Length: 94
Image 1 (cartoon, rainbow, N blue to C red):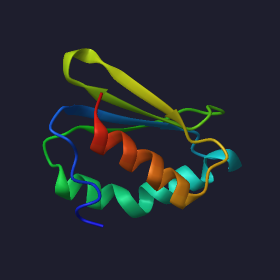
Image 2 (image 1 turned 90 degrees about the horizontal axis):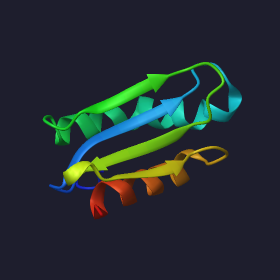
Image 3 (image 1 turned 45 degrees about the vertical axis):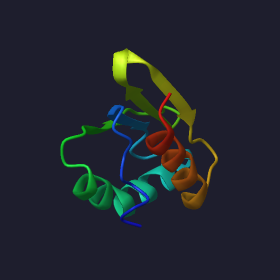
């Protein structure tokens, strides 16, 4: 898993938005509990922000060089599907 979360050099920030109590954000919370320490350990200088808001649909944003952003919805996905979406964002760039 360590190589999986080695971010691309053009990635400047990753933001997760999710609800701290709703069922539709449960897989996102589970994923972050498991994967956040590994992501931060492998990318200590890249901000990984966790934003909790009541009733919000779970999403992940990746900000790259020159302010370009990509967004993926995480609603209704399993832990493994979330991992695949996040891996795609942090590895590819724009």
